[in-house]
Length: 271
Ligand SMILES: [Zn+2]
Image (cartoon, rainbow, N blue to C red):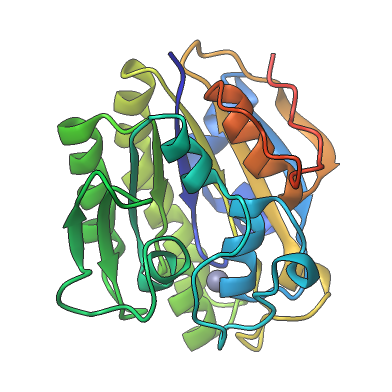
């Protein structure tokens, strides 16, 4: 039975990922992975895009139109659908994901680590500080995989966003962090493939040289989608432009979970 890990690297730009993430690049170059270009939904802001990616609908439809809207999702979404199908969900992610799918407001103590089958995100490890070290989060995600074998796991590191907002996207700090994340991911991807996972690596939005995002410039909205399948087969660099809205139905289709009617975008064809 298929399982999925979504690596949602906050503020991972398409061009910077392609130029600096060498292990992912190797998998693409040797057709062990596929690479697509996502022209991201708007606004290119975090919380609206977290919800767009997980509901498959645009911001005006799901209503989380700004970062300031801190409430539970009102739409069918990936976590709820996977849970509804009796499968196991997990996340190592920013606290806003706990607010969107488990409960708001986030309690920094009670909600920080959860293992509760009744929750929508059953196994959650949540952080609240943008500078929380990515390596700690990646290892939390890796442990969740080993311990609970979730059918769907979200890994959501903030390092690209933190370095991009602090130093701007045209900086050694932002670019070098993409190299760093790729090196963290490489051994984990090898393990996760062996465990039967399909791994997606994407971004919620990009970032510009001023360290800003929210708008419609290519720097702010263009992100990659890497697709790594456990059978080692990939389409290589497709140069195809796809939509953020396709991610949710693609995940559910892979997991053999019914796709809610609200998710109208076409799932990607991965074969
Ligand atoms: Zn973000």
